[in-house]
Amino acid sequence: MPIHDWTRVTAGTWHDFHLAWITEIRNALNDGLLPHDYYAQAEQIAGPLGPDVLTLQESQVPSEGSGSVPGGIAAVVAETPPRTRISAEATMNDYVLKRRTLVIRHASGDRIIALLEVISPGNKSARHVLRSFVEKAVESLYRGYHLLIIDLFPPGPRDPHGIHAAIWAEFSDDAEPLPPGEPLTLAAYSAGTVKRAYVEPMAVGRELIDMRLFLEPDVYVNVPLEATYQAAYRGVPRRWRDLLD
Image 1 (cartoon, rainbow, N blue to C red):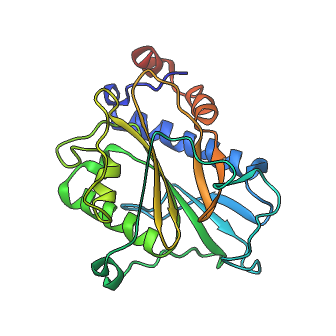
Image 2: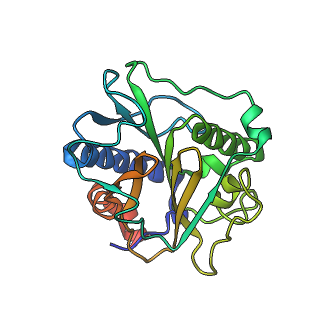
């Protein structure tokens, strides 16, 4: 199913689809994609980068450096490199390392592994809102939380080169711009000591690809974006599907 032009419908219509898509992604992750000691759930935090989905690990499981991720369908970067057209890596500069950070917590007490965010127009609605989103994305990576961002809205005056360029500018001065005619963005970030980005530019009318959600700096699962998008789209009211299709 091709990506639809969500700028053609109301914010409420996108919000309704957004919620359904997040539910489908959560269900797919919990239905065998994630290793058995990991789980995903929707997050209730409001505001910029109150992430749509959290991936967590049971608190009794050893943290980083275990060297294996049992169960699920996980891949290792060295064996199966992510197949995105744009990749980059950077270390955090001294300014970022010295900043006071926002600690993202979860009430369960289990360890946060990764965050997934589906961008909405509200994330770009004002300069300070976008700035807050970018800062919290950078701070999340600093805390070691891997990140997957899905942006099906074209760049605007506040992110003229796309959401990835806005985030990566905090790490490097050479963020690669989006190619002409491909204004949408899928971006996966590995939050190891060296930060790595895997970016796939997209466009309306194209099918989504599976994107990597990192569980460790070099271990990831593939999130079935196309299948979950299709499942969520089936529930869109006919009145809006007629316009989108």
